[in-house]
Length: 212
Length: 212
Image 1 (spheres, rainbow over the protein chains, first blue to last red):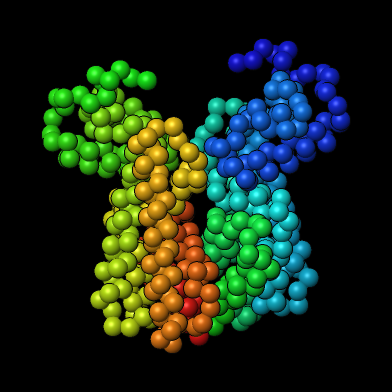
Image 2: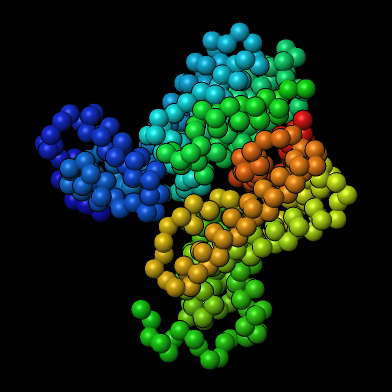
């Protein structure tokens, strides 16, 4: 346990709290995405942003607290994008097409965040000792379930309107999410395979699973 | 580092080396499968089989060495079953159907092994200090790639013969494996959803992805 005085330093090296926090999240997502969570030293994240371990602790209780925060943020962003693309489409089939294509319309930093989300999610199953670790873990878990519910509702409505084949909407949602997510287990940016081509391939696959 | 004399104890508590090793693998797979790898204490695995930590070390260098061995064994079994089911079918479509159904024809212990394989696989990306850890990690990685190659070859032959739609066989193999594997991220034995129904749902999904 650190002494109380070290937990919330009053003066920080430079930049506002908000921008420093964002810089830590960006640096950590980049390192976790490239080298994996186990392959990244927490001290290297601090060094990458030019702050000491004590200042780092002001923002994140631990490496895993930072990981869960990256996950929760990425999930909020994925939800926002799914809602934006599906609400602007004129029918369910076009909405699904737009949502899956959009799930592959990513910057390199987005790809790393997606890879972290998929590759490290089993860590969300275990309790952690810290209060902030547990809060961020619960937030990420809740958001995974929220996204599932949004997909289930979307698919069920599409079935009601006759746009999609009648089947168990929960099983279907999990299959579609599982299929899309699996691409980020192996996809690496910068290779010969372009993300837009991958997006088209997976969009075709998802349509095949939902249509009659 | 343990002293040399502790590494290979000459006398073991009871049972042959082979059956004791199998008992450790079974107990560890059960605990990792139920509680997750991070949620399982290595000492509890030893206690579950009734051996001490020193004797445990005779068989496995570490918890992660045991994990990778479980993965490598599960992959060898998955390959054997894929080859057996596909070689006995009279055409490619029936072979695929049989292979996917078979991938869901599992005992509870098999489900746990499958869950470990899928949920913990990102640990295979990181180097480990121990020689036996690294050997088992490399073996599991090689077997994942071997299964991919077997699927790619199978799909490419099916396309050649006109049984499957022409598409990139490597992308398709990864999509099918990703889809099937994703079920074991969330499926828990003993609930209202029966594994045979799940198998039928995923078999239908896989056929939709490969057929014209």
